Length: 600
Image (cartoon, helix red, strand yellow):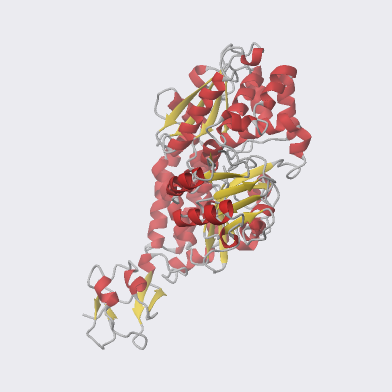
């Protein structure tokens, strides 16, 4: 017999599955079946740091969200809460009547796109319809002209969430006005920034919202076909999107004569091979056409000559997911959020050394400190907040001293950073900013398509300089050369990859120049990260000669007999850190500076 007293939801997005949600679901299904309950599968709630998540909703609508739910905890929740009627307080991360340490994670967010994530079943179109799904499309096709739709998006102030922040309505307007009978709308789901997972989570958890936004965009620009370009590394997102496309077609929201309006629209998925450069719109179009993904000169812009030579509008996942809300609730409801020139909300993937990492949605204008400390809960290591990287490899490193900077397009640009697609990497005092710049430049150098000289050769030369510096072989003149090269690469590169690749280098040179000088002048790494500029020491007064460090050293660099303090041979030591991790007596120290050569 069906139990109507409780509903139970289990988060089964990629973050949840990686944390063991599949096992939790398998464990809880038979337990709930005995109580007459079938659990609902949902997507990501955004609280990735405490997955797996299980939510219990009672008949009064009160919600109880349990975090880190392993199989044994699932059994306890069923026994005590479902059967006994008493919430398991110590396992709660959120609750209608409960005050928990996790509550601030939600309190300062303003959820528009994430409102239904973790609440609806991404595999069920009925679940989407229950929360107002496809009402916006019905409104558009029933009572709005394409021009009125474009005007509404313009009034809302929606700007592209892919990174550049170009006004969405202008893209739509230019494509609609372009000559050509066949036009296309393309959804850019090629999320390539390391640590970014906003688009993946939206597609996994609420694919119909993106699909509805695409259909409306197609109607507005005069397109009858759309493509979703998604990297193949997102199998769950692709699977859920395919399910959504099929369901929308069966219900009449896709295909011929949609809702009896005479408007035809179809959607296909194209899987990318994971090339970062294919996030650039012209390279993306080349890839959809079956060619090598390489940017081309503009003009002509895609709005005039895009996919298969036809007028094409390209928007990213988050941009399109905003469209149904704006149409359904009205432009005024959306534009009241955010700042004067950055309207609405922005979704960020909060990652790095932060206590509450996950998916967050904030009104534009919230400060960096509010995101890191109020929403993110502060630094997970207990150490000082040092910097935040926004915009991934194309973005900039912002020092903690600028933590009061509002997060919007103009404010971030003013300090040398960019919004990007929404990656936000938090760093503490143990992070070497020279190494961070080297890491991101390694990525962009590897991902360069090689078409233009400035990007192909310039980024490689910059990386060579950074490698020299982190190896203790750099000079002060290298810093000037590095800065000069960075500016030339920005000015001379063909596409956004090369034009923004120097951002991490320029911002670290600007805000953390003292660290660069320590590397080149003093031959030391203040953060004790760069292997060539650190060494390990065993303090004889603290060493108990237990031999753990000696046994764990992979190169035999540690010597010492029983009851005799051990010694590290610096010529043999490879600075792997295994000795430090194995010592239980705090006898080993990482010291800044290159080791002194051993005496012959």
